[in-house]
Amino acid sequence: RVQVMESGGGTVQAGGSLTVSCKVNGYTTREYCVGWFRHVPGKEREAVAGIFTGIGNTYLAASVKGRFTISQDSAKDTISLQMNSVKLEDTAIYSCATRPYGCTRPLASGPRESDFPDWGQGIQVTVSS
Image 1 (cartoon, one colour):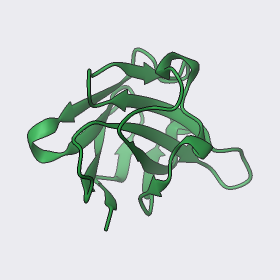
Image 2: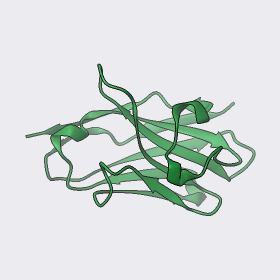
Image 3: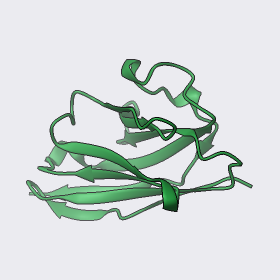
């Protein structure tokens, strides 16, 4: 059974840093595509970052490029999203989504919700002023 579990959310002051992590269990492969999405009620879900663990290529949305970093710890099957210089508009529920064996489209085109069969519960990140 596949499990995708986010951790590390919480409240951070604007300008500060926070890391959210995604632990993946249950795949028979260590090569999988990961997308980080965020959602604010009343708005569309936004793809924030992505990574393919096979070769380590990544994607960052324009709204977070230069501030966020996505990385993997292959030994722990964990993908981390390091958020620096956070802004009030980064407040959202952050969800990790995964797909075994690879991404269905080039990461550079941006992850899409429909690409991922396995999702975590989501975790709240709140940026305070």
